[in-house]
Structures are given as structure tokens and as C-alpha cells.
Picture 1 (cartoon, rainbow, N blue to C red):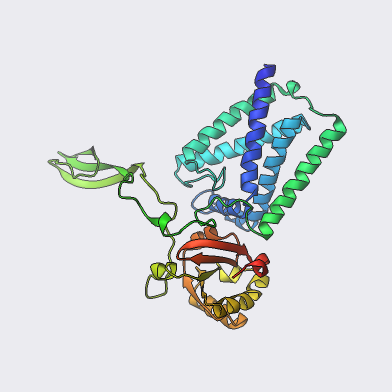
Picture 2 (picture 1 turned 90 degrees about the vertical axis):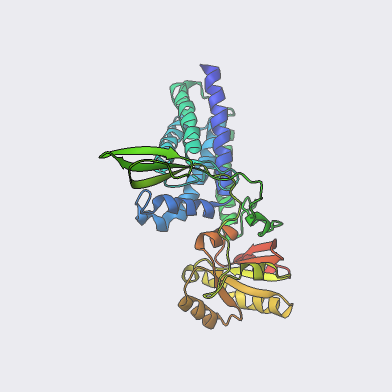
Length: 364
């Protein structure tokens, strides 16, 4: 039992640190995922949405710290029961998402590793079993170091986690796992190869045959049935190949300008997913930077999901000499974790991006 507990201790501790650190690298992204869970069509606890970022930072810092606590044997009873409470909650969340098909990606490992809801639930069940072993074998979890050193390490892990979370919020994630990372080409990641795996669908047809409802399953073809058609339900068996970028677009009210702008040699994108909630200090910095970019021959555009009134108001209030185009809010949030954020493109390739806090350091 002692060796089983030590194995569980190391496995759970390391996994919690890795999972927590990946999310701590991008707490804003995890907060967007929490907003999905809090939404009316999932858990219907929308009153928590304004606190999503605060909860995001708390959860991921707590996750990392608990992993460290477990490995060094600091406050074992508090640590193990806290881990148990956390994994019970996560297991419920992933089961709910998987069973009711609510959230396609749990966000357990951020954008570094995508897991389906059922994969996430399976992972949480395994962790739940291992943590229950830790609860049963609590007496075998002993501190690795003396009390003072253990306390110093525990306190340092907490302070370091808080600092790192604050740092990436004030700048950008230190490691960018997303499809819009520096060096990646947007057009190439929107293409579906000719030999890519196609989606596999299952069709369940319902017919009224001699007064009785009967179901017939096909892969899409209309069944030859001597009866009255009632309806059909479609189920995705395999989604096939999904390109890394699916919904990126740059649109005016009249046309799709995506290809036009992605072929520009020098393009600056000012990303503001929601103009009304953008950071005013950041917006105030835009004019000097964008005016300089225009003087140096860059095409400057804004991307937002906000309406015309908000777009015209921000242009007038801050005397911005560029136009805003429409893009999906979720896509803009994915491109850059700042509101506003700056992205430099050369013929569709991301050559640089920055948080508004660091706009002065952006080289043109």
C-alpha cells in the first residue's frame, strides 16, 4: 500500500502541476472556457460570468500549488481533501459536458492538448481513483523536507504562481499553443487537404410502416422503404480532419475581404473583440502606433465583433485613422489575448503580436 500511495502521489502531483501551469500560462483563455460552462445552455449560472477571470486565476493557482504541496508532503490532510473536492467537481463537469454534449473541449490542458469530453471524463475518473487511494493511505504521505524548508517551498510556489499569472495577464502567454502563434500562416491552416479524412455520419430514418414507426440506419443514402417518411436524425461518428483555423474572416457589411487582406505584404491588425469593454488605456495608445505604421507603408485595420455605432464612436473619440471590419468574437479572443491587441502579418504569416501594455516595444 505504501508504494501504491507514493506512485499515486507522484502521478497526481506532477499531472496537477502540468495541467495547472498550462492554464496558468493563459488564464484569460481558461476564463473564456469557464464562461462557456457558466452559460445558459450549459450550467445556467450566468451570474458567475463577470467573475470568470478571478475564478480562473484562483483555480489554476490552487491547482499548481496543490500539486507542489502533494509532492513535498506539505499539509497532507488539507492537500489530499482539497484535491478530492477539486477532482469531484471536475469529474461532474466533464461528465455533464460529455453526456449532454455541451462543451466540445474541456480546457483541462488549455490549447496545448485538446481532449474530447469523454476523454476528459476518463482522465478525471482515473485521477479520482488515485486520489481516493491517497485519502485511504494518508498516513503514508510524509513531508520530504524539514518543516521550515517545506513551508518556504510551499510559500514560494504560491507567490511564483501568482506572479506568473499576473505577468501573462499584463502581457501575453509566455508559450503560445494556438493556431495564430508567431510564425504560423493563417491561410495554410485554413486549408483542408484533398486526402484528408472525411466526416463519417450516421443517419437514423423514421418511417411509418403499416401504422408502426420503424427506424432504418444508413450512412446517408435514402433507404428504400415501403412506408411514409416521418423524419431523420443525424449523428457524427467521426468528425474527420478539422483544420486548425476554421472561422477566421475579415468582412465588411458588403463582402468578404479575408483573402484580400491576407495577401498584403505589411498588415497591422488591431484586435478588439468588444470595443465597449476594451481597456481605455490601451485604446489611447493606438493612435500613435497606427499612425506610425501607416507612415511606414503598413495597411492598418481593426477587427471587432462590435456594431457600427461602437466602431464609429471609438474612431471619433480616439481619432483613429483606420477602419474596423467584422470578425467572430471567439476568433478574435483566440488570435491575441488582449483587448486591444496588435498583430503584424506578412502575406498571412504572423510575424509579431503584442499586448497593448507592450505596444511601445512593437517594432515596425
